Image 1: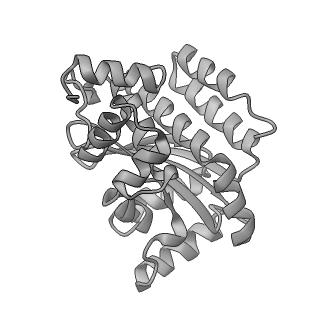
Image 2: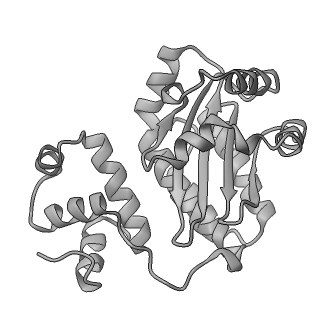
Length: 238
């Protein structure tokens, strides 16, 4: 990430007090990562949509006008998952999906994408998406190098966005998923990350996703802080 100072981006997010500020930051992120687009897309429990990003107004208006939310393979696929998803792993085989993809490419969305599902406690669902037009090898290298930072930014962005939508927040603490509980429990017991990944039969990349997700749910500064908070709240027992 040659052109992006991650710490500065996170500080800018913390300091932002307007939706226009979020729009400026997401545009700067797109430029810094050197990709075509970055987008934060929210779908609440009532099906209402909200977001900001760098897609053209023409594409956003078409998406809403044709209610593409119903057929968008990214939305449908990510809603069933908790892990970040490379668009190539989604089901694009139906006629409606192929037509949707063709339209998206026509409007400059890009042929590659990486979407991070983020969930709220009351049925809310959000995505932080990066998309670009390039070949598969170039995209694979980009995801390998930047996926962890994108996950971190996505969750920070979501947390900040919620401050501008108070009716979408909940006073209840966010529960950890069963896999997050397993991961944090083993870490609390002193397992190394490699040992935790082996015990849970997952990759270390997947483990990092669980740990980062748990950390943000707990509002923790780092993994040690997250373990301490999980223990103090009775979310894990060792």
